[in-house]
Length: 207
Image (cartoon, rainbow, N blue to C red; front, top):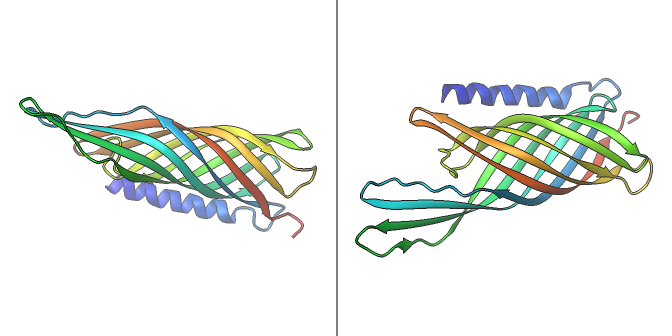
């Protein structure tokens, strides 16, 4: 738990740096919202030697938002929060009794990440971006006990309605690795997301 608190503090410090870095210079601030669908493999666990309890998880839709500060036309820092819906299927099977299937329930994965963003123009109305970083998350799914670490990377396109536009449509994908290390052992999970969103300039260098 001590390592989690240190990491949580580090994320807060880096996030504050991302929000304030270059405030007196020619930086640009962006706000964005996005959503989409996620895909990952199911997990089954056998917890009882005389009976079997199986847990399966299905990733559903997700949504989130971000604040990005561009320190240069090519490089930015982004504070990103995401809410991932997960459906949990559970069944209990005794060797001497029929399988008992429980009602599926929905669970929520919440993640806060600090990402470095590299963005390069393809044309006057299109831009490619690559991003990566890490942060913390919360959610009791895939064998994760609650608070956990996360690493993420992704890429996509920004499509502008016209040259010089202050807004853009975002399409892309991302890969996510979740890591939970506790006294009882470690657990990991990974999945991919497909994202569609909308971004606009909150503050330009001339404002």
